[in-house]
Amino acid sequence: MTAIVEKGRARPPRGPKRPTVICDEIKDWIVTQNLKPGDRLPQEKALIERFRASKGTMREALRSLEAQGLVTTRTGPGGGIFVAALEDTRAMELLANYFFFRQPSIADIYTVRCQLEPELAASLVGHLREEDYQRLEDTMRVYDHPAETVGEEYQQRMAELDFHAVLAEISPNPVLGFMCGFLQNLLRNLTVCRRIYDRPNPALREVGLSYQTRLIAALKAEDGESVRSIMYKHMLSAWRYMEACEAEMKTDFLRLRR
Image 1: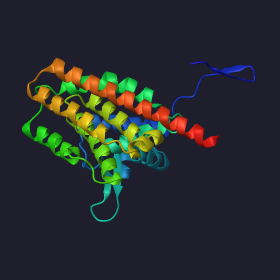
Image 2: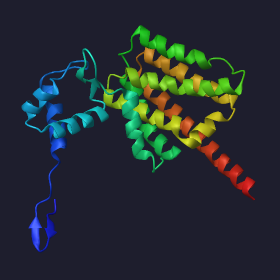
Image 3: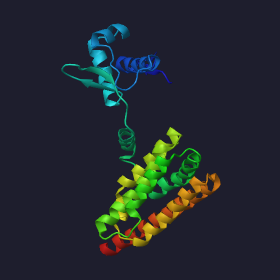
Image 4: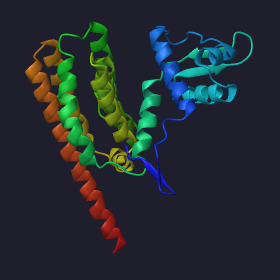
């Protein structure tokens, strides 16, 4: 790191602030002590002594850990500072903030989905239990019949994404599962995607259902190559459809502006 020059003299770069250092030390200590969500941390006074920090520094470090979702503070009888587990949904919300001012495109998302979703599906081969298949089939029942209203069709579109969310949740690879779940959440929240999902298209349901039915059959047969191929074709088909809808919407918008 480049040194900072002030009035002709080189000043070494500043290290992390003390609360940040204490925050990292508490994280390390939680791991080494094998603490689990729900376990109580020592009282503030004991933490101050253990980490040799001032009261203000310790409180700032604890506020940082709480903002990260790693500890929670309870008041009243039985209260204190407790280890917490950051929920997947909360982690994805925080990560999505990175894209708040740099919205990804449909192509950006599907370029990655086409790479990861087939591997996600293949990772499940030989690992699914009967209750996992039941969850997938229960999800598919939401859209295994034609929708009677536009509102129901929208709910069916969301349920189709839920099918992929279940795959991500039960993946034996937590990193792969989280990344695929995050991409699915981006699709749910992207403005252009929400507009596409609002557009009626009864035939789309049958296409997605066909891919997913074949995928489950291949998973039950433990045919990894077929699983990977079916999911790749499913993602490619969805990508083409979404981009075609996006192009049509842009054409409609330009026509209205004339």
